[in-house]
Length: 170
Image (tube, rainbow, N blue to C red; front, side, top):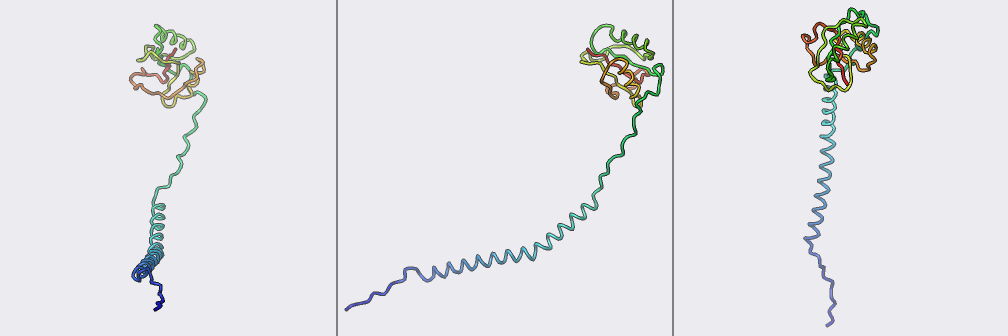
């Protein structure tokens, strides 16, 4: 009795069916995702674009500020019409009074000469009230100073009617 042995299939038929069903499900999932992107993505992109355009149209347009009027570089007031407050900011006794006398010789009016609140200024400089920049530049030139700046840190009652403030540094 010779029996012919038939090969026995090792894999179970349900395993092949499960793998085939999973592959088919994955393929369907990819198809559904692509279909939803095509159908929902286009209207979503269109509505986002429309909202961005509306926002851009309603946003205020930034226009550059007009340039300030040119500052005259030539002093309009004479030295005799310009009052200077001299503040000693270097700590040397009598420095404000000495400088005030020097300014009087140059023709400036002196509002007051006194000590500054601080006495550790590294350099001398001129400060000016609004509208008196050309006169401040002239005063700085007369004294050989480089720094000219708008008035800061003083209130009008402290100016004694002066338009310029000279702070003496070391």
